[in-house]
Structures are given as C-alpha cells and as structure tokens.
Amino acid sequence: EIVLTQSPGTLSLSPGEGATLSCRASQSVGSSYLAWYQQKPGQAPRLLIYDASNRATGIPDRFSGSGSGTDFTLTISRLEPEDFAVYYCQQYGNSPFTFGPGTKVDIK
Amino acid sequence: EVQLVDSGGGLVQPGGSLRLSCAASGFTFSSYAMSWVRQAPGKGLEWVSAIIGSGVSTYYADSVKGRFTISRDNSKNTVYLQMNSLRGEDTAVYYCAKTLVRGGWLPMDVWGKGTTVTVSS
Image (cartoon, rainbow over all chains, first blue to last red; front, side, top):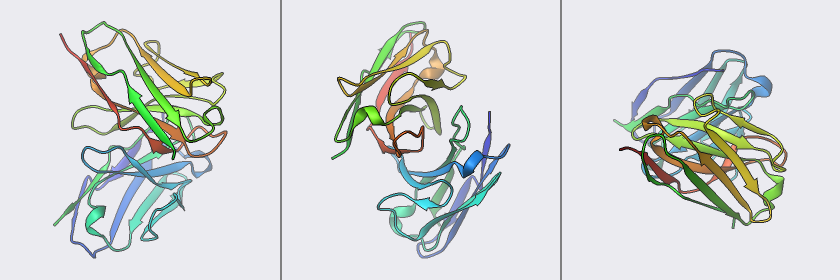
C-alpha cells in the first residue's frame, strides 16, 4: 500500500498570500497518478488537480500542481476567502487508492 | 446535469448489515468507474472501493475486504455497497463518486452529498 504524508498539517495564512502544500508518497506513484481535492465543512470533496498537474474543469488558475515520483506539490498563488479549507492528495496509480491525511489551510 | 444521489445510511448494530445505493444521472453510467469513499466523524477521507463500468472488476481497501461488496446495475444507473459484519470503526459519512475519465479508475470528479452510517448498540 502506498502511504501518503501531507505537510504541514495546518497552514495559517492571510487572504492574498500564497500557499504551498506538500504530499509525499512512500513509493513512486505510477504515471503521476496523483490528485488533489478541496473539502469545506459539511461538503463533499471537490476535485482540483489530477495527473499531478492538470486542473479540473472550472478550477481557477491560481491553483497549480506539480511533482512526480514521490514528491508532489499543490500551490495556491493568492489565497481567496473561499480557499480556506482542507486539502487532500490521493494516489490512484495502485490499489488501494489511498488518501493523505490532509492539510488544513486556515485564516491567520 | 451530472448528479449522484446516495442513500441507505442509518443506525445499525455491530455485526449487522446495510446496503448503500447511489443513483446516477446525466452521463453514460456504464462507461464510468464508480467509487465509494468514507469519512469518519472529524477525520480524513478514506477510499473504500471501486468498480469498473462493466462491473467485471473491483477493488477494495484492506479495512473492508471480505466484509463489503461493491456492485452496480447499469440498467438502473445505480451502484451499491453491501456492508456486512459492521464495526464501530465503519461509522462514517459514505460518499459515492464518479471517475473523471471513461475507462479509468480514478480520480473522482463528481460526488454525491453523502449518506451517514452509524454502527452502535
């Protein structure tokens, strides 16, 4: 099983600042099959990024993904008020298709 | 509009069974893999199971293997999760989700609102 580790656990930032979230895999993720999701309280997750760097439909370009192998990054260039949420990475290169524990981005 | 409506959650005693359903609309259901993902109270997301569009292939998380069974009825545009031998740690909101790409397993681009399963005596 591929174990995903996300850091930091919590990121306290102000609107307008940039955010860098990390996702590290215990072994290489095949074909860069890594996705990022955003989840707000009481809501279902929302797909942001797939295949490590492709934005899903309707996702603003302030969200970008990068990385390969075992190290992946989600970058939010300038935080908008609606971006404060929990972010999860998920690998789908090998079953079981594991999630990371999440990074909470909250308002400083 | 692509929509998933998950249902079937409720309160069940440890050792009991429950079947979740997810009714899909707005896309060619049989062409897309479907997954179930759960979230225990105050915890993160846990992928549970997935089934390919034809239904001939499935995957499970180790935590549910042998107890849960995913299936689908493409004539009814519905995916199911049969949950047996339920334990307290199965208490969670269960989401069904559609895969992004035809023929692929994941990622999941459309999600249901979730149905709550509580395992307690």
